[in-house]
Image (tube, rainbow, N blue to C red; front, side):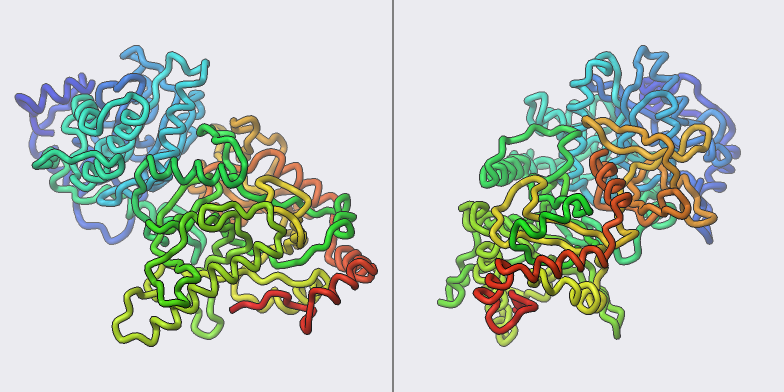
Length: 631
């Protein structure tokens, strides 16, 4: 390695590289050629571009230590001995400086750099927040999660004297972006002050201008004129990528056709705007505003009760309609004049480009759109049978508020009618009109996904739904949803919404980790902490590299013959496992074994009751199957 002189040497000493490996220029070039030569295949243990000569870590910012990614010992073949930086070496170096590590936040977009057990074996918590890097600024939900994790860490008495390591690939742009967000929100400093604090601790600081501009835009603070960012560091100038993108495509497992946040486009949302929208959601649901917490992993929406043999009697206590249960991520949707926002199950917001005109569109008033209309629904991916072309559709199945007014106390059948009259029909009317225009003022075909209202059927049509309708749907389903026709919208589990799953479709989302001894570990949530589920066994496809699943949320179904959980897929839209109550409920349903035959027999009995037949005659009109038809 070349001898480093002057200011560069001082900088390296400042960051703790006390033991420098000095060698001849030829040796340096040998190592460079070994890594930087063109590759015909992806080497899982190739070094991230620019990593080798990037200083390993910076000065602490309070209890936060910015760092480049430590690489497991598997990378040692590509690293000169004096330049190695493994998780263990990071722990030891910080310990020598009097810093015990209690948390590691990993912002890289791949799992190939080290196994999670490199931290957990030392009783250090590891949190994965995937951020693509390069010119892709971390989204608002990732920022919210990062800040929440750091705040929670500071609140734990057991971690009072410990430090948190934050790293991306090089520990500058993504790492700096997240730390600046934390400082602005929790230290009462301006964006400029926070950027300067990070730059002093981790020179040269954030050097990608897009990240710096996004910070000022996020907090609606004026940018300095002119806005001058640091020059790209010398060690980075010949490396124009973080290698996360390469590693992500080669080292991560994703479901074919599955949707990610990136599929929706999205853009950063100012923190104050997110808080305003969250407060509105809590207000219309009559809930208290909740502070961020690990235990708060569900959106404040309605959740179904699992229908098993013990609860079968509920079908005769209310008038239910039925629809299919889609295998797709759930999202609430908030429509505002300034934009449309998807809200996932962790209550993170993402802005998407959709248009929802009001009924004034019938009068030619295209300028009037919805103001704080809150919907509930799910995202599905449909495949055209003939062309195999995939398209994404948002299916609306409930409404909570319209134009700032809560409708949660209205009966379900009224809310379903409002979805059709106030949301779907005006939108379809305008779309059909614009298709006839030579120069339309809006192009619906450029939206990231379609929007429809979900169909509901008379409960007596359940047999036909299972045998005829569901098999013909162009997207996956896992059971039935029974919705009480007169139920209000309740922001928790309640008997007005029941879910029955097909045999073998009772699944649980676990956090999977590979133990130090190579054992397979399954975790769930309990009281905001992860809980090891003793005695559980999970089976993967033969030949699977289990390290690729370690630290991921995996959906598993129960196989009674194998007496084990069977891997189904990685849950790319979740960062936390299910609560232990979901696991216990799934076990109860599996043991209860409510088969299709038993369910349909009970529905036939209920459909024969006078109260049900009289109600059908009064409300069904000419159609007994599909009460609400798609428009």
